[in-house]
Image (cartoon, rainbow, N blue to C red; front, side):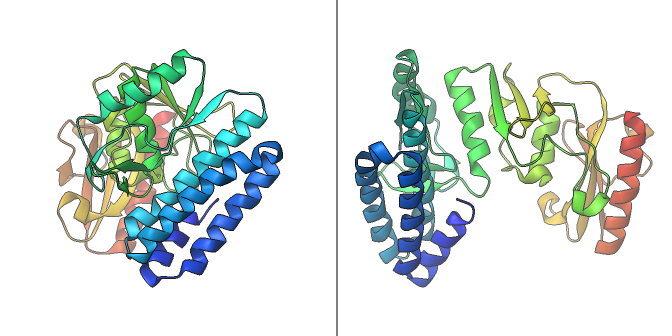
Length: 311
């Protein structure tokens, strides 16, 4: 259902109810294909979700309207599992409470355990929406783009999981943006704080807070693609050394221009450049450039150094 969130946001911004109707029809088509025998049961729930989306769209509430794509996806996914003999339950509100969009409440852990653990104990697979939570007054709201990864880490933390898997369109975290460096390598291992810093700098298009709930825990994360034997293992401890290069807007570090950073536990004396900023725990070192082309050039040079270090 690629593009649904953007379409819902645009529909709310422009008051285009016909765009919402198109989205609902695409989910109905998927449901007919995936679970024809249970179509009526799940379609009625999708009708309720559609009605809710229309109400928020009519108010021009972009964030709340966008959240409904996940609610529709949960319905189709639960139907797909049931059609294949797997006991499942669509849990539209798993307990992630948002004080405001993107701001997760400390009450969430209690509610998540209350709503999901009894299903798991009964051998029922909960199907939970990523990317969204619910405000205290019962309104859906988003965690921000890429928030499904953040949802997974929050759930892993709240439920005391030992591991969380992220399935993406590439088999792991790359050492650099393929559109910039040209020859990126899959990083086999990162520690969780390195992964957190890299995601905060825009690496892998993860939500900036994806790895935050895993810091200080024994939870390991594995990033891979479906069917791949390769991936990146993120754990509490990992071998020291540079892992990746990030190129990002320097506003993220309170500066103007383009920033380049080497991510990984490195002795600053081993760096091939003089950094002008660093992560507070020494997991990244970087430099800011006024000229974007120069920043790209430096990113490529540093990536070659990172890859040669790994060999």
